[in-house]
Amino acid sequence: MARLPRLIVPFQPHHVVQRGLNGQGIFHDADDYTAFLGWLRSAARNWKVAVHAYALTPGELHFLVTPSDEEGLGLMMQWIGRYYVPYFNQKYGRAGTLWQGRYKTSVIDAESYLMSNSRYIEFLPVRTGLAGQPAQYAWSSYAHHAGLRSDPVVTDHALYWALGNTPFQREAAYQELAGSDLPAEQIAIVEQAVLKGWPLGSERFKTELQNRVKRQVLPAKRGRPFKKPALAAIAD
Image (cartoon, rainbow, N blue to C red; front, side, top):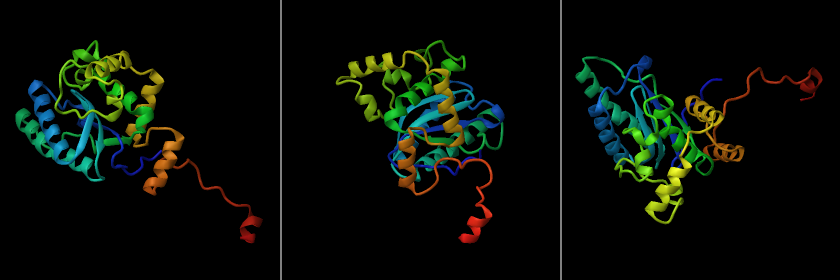
Protein backbone atom coordinates (compact mmCIF):
# COMPACT_ATOMS: atom_id res chain seq x y z
CA MET A 1 0.00 0.00 0.00
CA ALA A 2 1.25 3.47 -0.84
CA ARG A 3 2.29 5.72 2.00
CA LEU A 4 -0.09 8.58 2.65
CA PRO A 5 1.12 12.19 2.73
CA ARG A 6 2.57 13.00 6.13
CA LEU A 7 -0.07 13.91 8.70
CA ILE A 8 0.77 16.33 11.52
CA VAL A 9 -1.99 17.09 14.03
CA PRO A 10 -1.41 19.85 16.62
CA PHE A 11 -1.62 18.82 20.28
CA GLN A 12 -1.69 15.12 19.38
CA PRO A 13 1.23 12.78 20.18
CA HIS A 14 3.34 11.58 17.23
CA HIS A 15 5.87 8.75 17.00
CA VAL A 16 8.78 9.91 14.82
CA VAL A 17 11.48 7.73 13.26
CA GLN A 18 14.61 8.76 11.32
CA ARG A 19 17.28 6.33 10.07
CA GLY A 20 20.78 6.65 8.72
CA LEU A 21 21.41 6.56 4.97
CA ASN A 22 21.77 2.98 3.71
CA GLY A 23 21.90 1.70 7.26
CA GLN A 24 25.04 3.65 8.17
CA GLY A 25 25.69 4.95 11.65
CA ILE A 26 24.50 8.39 12.66
CA PHE A 27 26.19 8.35 16.09
CA HIS A 28 29.70 7.03 16.71
CA ASP A 29 30.66 8.24 20.18
CA ALA A 30 29.29 9.94 23.29
CA ASP A 31 30.06 13.40 21.93
CA ASP A 32 27.77 12.74 18.95
CA TYR A 33 24.86 11.75 21.16
CA THR A 34 25.44 14.69 23.49
CA ALA A 35 25.64 17.19 20.63
CA PHE A 36 22.46 15.83 19.04
CA LEU A 37 20.52 15.98 22.31
CA GLY A 38 21.61 19.57 22.83
CA TRP A 39 20.27 20.56 19.41
CA LEU A 40 17.12 18.50 19.98
CA ARG A 41 16.42 20.34 23.23
CA SER A 42 16.96 23.75 21.61
CA ALA A 43 14.89 22.90 18.53
CA ALA A 44 12.03 21.49 20.58
CA ARG A 45 11.91 24.67 22.64
CA ASN A 46 12.19 26.95 19.59
CA TRP A 47 9.41 25.22 17.66
CA LYS A 48 7.20 24.41 20.67
CA VAL A 49 7.38 20.62 20.32
CA ALA A 50 7.11 18.63 23.56
CA VAL A 51 9.43 15.59 23.63
CA HIS A 52 7.87 12.91 25.84
CA ALA A 53 10.21 9.99 25.10
CA TYR A 54 13.21 9.25 22.89
CA ALA A 55 15.88 6.71 22.05
CA LEU A 56 19.01 7.36 20.01
CA THR A 57 20.82 4.27 18.69
CA PRO A 58 23.80 4.10 16.33
CA GLY A 59 21.62 3.70 13.25
CA GLU A 60 18.30 5.35 14.04
CA LEU A 61 16.41 7.69 16.33
CA HIS A 62 12.89 7.55 17.74
CA PHE A 63 10.89 10.36 19.37
CA LEU A 64 7.48 10.52 20.99
CA VAL A 65 6.45 14.16 20.65
CA THR A 66 3.49 16.54 20.69
CA PRO A 67 3.71 19.53 18.31
CA SER A 68 1.75 22.70 19.06
CA ASP A 69 1.02 23.44 15.39
CA GLU A 70 1.21 21.82 11.96
CA GLU A 71 4.62 23.26 11.01
CA GLY A 72 6.66 22.95 14.20
CA LEU A 73 7.62 19.28 13.98
CA GLY A 74 8.93 19.57 10.43
CA LEU A 75 10.80 22.77 11.24
CA MET A 76 12.31 21.14 14.32
CA MET A 77 13.61 18.19 12.30
CA GLN A 78 15.00 20.50 9.60
CA TRP A 79 16.72 22.70 12.18
CA ILE A 80 18.39 19.75 13.87
CA GLY A 81 19.60 18.47 10.50
CA ARG A 82 21.10 21.84 9.58
CA TYR A 83 23.30 21.68 12.65
CA TYR A 84 23.94 17.99 13.23
CA VAL A 85 24.67 16.84 9.66
CA PRO A 86 27.47 19.41 9.02
CA TYR A 87 28.89 18.61 12.47
CA PHE A 88 28.90 14.89 11.69
CA ASN A 89 30.25 15.30 8.15
CA GLN A 90 33.13 17.53 9.23
CA LYS A 91 34.04 15.27 12.12
CA TYR A 92 34.09 12.07 10.06
CA GLY A 93 35.28 13.43 6.72
CA ARG A 94 32.16 12.77 4.68
CA ALA A 95 29.72 14.77 2.56
CA GLY A 96 26.07 14.72 1.65
CA THR A 97 22.94 13.72 3.47
CA LEU A 98 23.00 11.57 6.59
CA TRP A 99 19.36 10.49 6.57
CA GLN A 100 17.51 7.70 4.78
CA GLY A 101 14.88 9.91 3.20
CA ARG A 102 12.42 12.03 5.13
CA TYR A 103 11.52 11.24 8.70
CA LYS A 104 8.49 9.01 9.26
CA THR A 105 5.72 9.69 11.73
CA SER A 106 2.47 8.26 13.07
CA VAL A 107 -0.26 10.18 14.92
CA ILE A 108 -0.98 8.43 18.21
CA ASP A 109 -4.20 7.93 20.16
CA ALA A 110 -2.79 9.02 23.52
CA GLU A 111 -5.27 7.21 25.75
CA SER A 112 -4.71 3.87 24.03
CA TYR A 113 -1.12 3.94 22.81
CA LEU A 114 1.03 6.68 24.37
CA MET A 115 2.47 4.47 27.10
CA SER A 116 2.88 1.55 24.70
CA ASN A 117 4.85 3.70 22.29
CA SER A 118 6.97 5.04 25.12
CA ARG A 119 7.82 1.46 26.09
CA TYR A 120 8.49 0.57 22.46
CA ILE A 121 10.93 3.45 22.11
CA GLU A 122 12.75 2.93 25.41
CA PHE A 123 13.13 -0.82 24.86
CA LEU A 124 14.67 -0.28 21.41
CA PRO A 125 18.26 -0.48 22.78
CA VAL A 126 17.40 -3.78 24.49
CA ARG A 127 15.63 -5.12 21.41
CA THR A 128 18.65 -4.33 19.24
CA GLY A 129 21.21 -5.80 21.64
CA LEU A 130 22.75 -2.54 22.86
CA ALA A 131 21.81 -3.08 26.52
CA GLY A 132 20.44 -5.77 28.79
CA GLN A 133 17.88 -3.44 30.39
CA PRO A 134 16.56 0.03 29.45
CA ALA A 135 18.18 1.55 32.54
CA GLN A 136 21.60 0.47 31.27
CA TYR A 137 21.37 2.59 28.13
CA ALA A 138 22.43 6.22 28.44
CA TRP A 139 20.81 7.67 25.31
CA SER A 140 17.11 7.25 25.97
CA SER A 141 14.45 8.80 28.18
CA TYR A 142 13.92 5.69 30.32
CA ALA A 143 16.17 6.89 33.16
CA HIS A 144 14.13 10.09 33.41
CA HIS A 145 10.80 8.28 33.61
CA ALA A 146 12.16 5.75 36.10
CA GLY A 147 13.54 8.46 38.38
CA LEU A 148 17.19 7.61 37.83
CA ARG A 149 18.11 11.06 36.51
CA SER A 150 16.41 14.24 35.36
CA ASP A 151 16.48 14.80 31.60
CA PRO A 152 16.05 18.40 30.38
CA VAL A 153 15.03 17.16 26.92
CA VAL A 154 11.87 15.51 28.26
CA THR A 155 8.51 17.17 28.81
CA ASP A 156 6.32 14.73 30.74
CA HIS A 157 2.95 13.97 29.19
CA ALA A 158 -0.19 14.35 31.30
CA LEU A 159 -0.69 10.57 31.19
CA TYR A 160 2.71 10.09 32.84
CA TRP A 161 1.74 12.54 35.58
CA ALA A 162 -1.48 10.60 36.06
CA LEU A 163 0.54 7.57 37.17
CA GLY A 164 0.88 9.00 40.70
CA ASN A 165 0.50 12.02 42.94
CA THR A 166 4.22 12.31 43.76
CA PRO A 167 7.40 11.88 41.70
CA PHE A 168 8.18 8.68 43.61
CA GLN A 169 4.75 7.22 42.86
CA ARG A 170 5.00 8.10 39.18
CA GLU A 171 8.50 6.69 38.84
CA ALA A 172 7.61 3.47 40.65
CA ALA A 173 4.46 3.05 38.56
CA TYR A 174 6.40 3.61 35.34
CA GLN A 175 9.08 1.10 36.33
CA GLU A 176 6.35 -1.48 36.87
CA LEU A 177 4.52 -0.54 33.68
CA ALA A 178 7.71 -0.64 31.60
CA GLY A 179 9.19 -3.67 33.31
CA SER A 180 9.21 -5.64 30.06
CA ASP A 181 9.08 -5.05 26.33
CA LEU A 182 5.83 -5.06 24.39
CA PRO A 183 4.55 -8.39 23.05
CA ALA A 184 5.70 -9.16 19.52
CA GLU A 185 2.30 -8.50 17.98
CA GLN A 186 2.13 -5.03 19.55
CA ILE A 187 5.67 -4.26 18.36
CA ALA A 188 4.58 -5.14 14.84
CA ILE A 189 1.52 -2.89 15.08
CA VAL A 190 3.60 0.09 16.25
CA GLU A 191 6.25 -0.45 13.57
CA GLN A 192 3.73 -0.84 10.76
CA ALA A 193 1.95 2.36 11.74
CA VAL A 194 5.00 4.59 11.98
CA LEU A 195 6.85 3.23 8.95
CA LYS A 196 3.78 3.55 6.74
CA GLY A 197 2.58 6.84 8.22
CA TRP A 198 -0.71 5.45 9.50
CA PRO A 199 -2.42 6.74 12.67
CA LEU A 200 -2.27 4.38 15.64
CA GLY A 201 -5.43 4.02 17.68
CA SER A 202 -8.92 2.62 17.85
CA GLU A 203 -11.26 2.67 14.87
CA ARG A 204 -13.23 5.41 16.60
CA PHE A 205 -10.05 7.46 16.97
CA LYS A 206 -9.21 7.04 13.28
CA THR A 207 -12.71 8.01 12.19
CA GLU A 208 -12.73 11.09 14.43
CA LEU A 209 -9.25 12.01 13.22
CA GLN A 210 -10.30 11.74 9.58
CA ASN A 211 -13.33 13.96 10.25
CA ARG A 212 -11.15 16.42 12.13
CA VAL A 213 -8.47 16.86 9.47
CA LYS A 214 -10.85 16.54 6.49
CA ARG A 215 -8.59 14.14 4.62
CA GLN A 216 -7.89 10.44 4.22
CA VAL A 217 -5.78 9.08 7.06
CA LEU A 218 -5.73 5.39 6.11
CA PRO A 219 -4.71 3.77 2.81
CA ALA A 220 -7.45 2.96 0.34
CA LYS A 221 -8.32 -0.66 -0.26
CA ARG A 222 -6.50 -2.39 -3.07
CA GLY A 223 -8.13 -3.19 -6.37
CA ARG A 224 -10.15 -1.34 -8.93
CA PRO A 225 -13.30 0.56 -7.94
CA PHE A 226 -16.43 -1.59 -8.00
CA LYS A 227 -18.24 -1.23 -11.32
CA LYS A 228 -21.98 -0.76 -11.41
CA PRO A 229 -24.01 -3.31 -13.40
CA ALA A 230 -24.83 -2.08 -16.87
CA LEU A 231 -28.56 -1.61 -16.18
CA ALA A 232 -27.86 0.36 -13.01
CA ALA A 233 -25.41 2.57 -14.88
CA ILE A 234 -28.04 3.25 -17.58
CA ALA A 235 -30.62 4.04 -14.92
CA ASP A 236 -28.23 6.58 -13.37
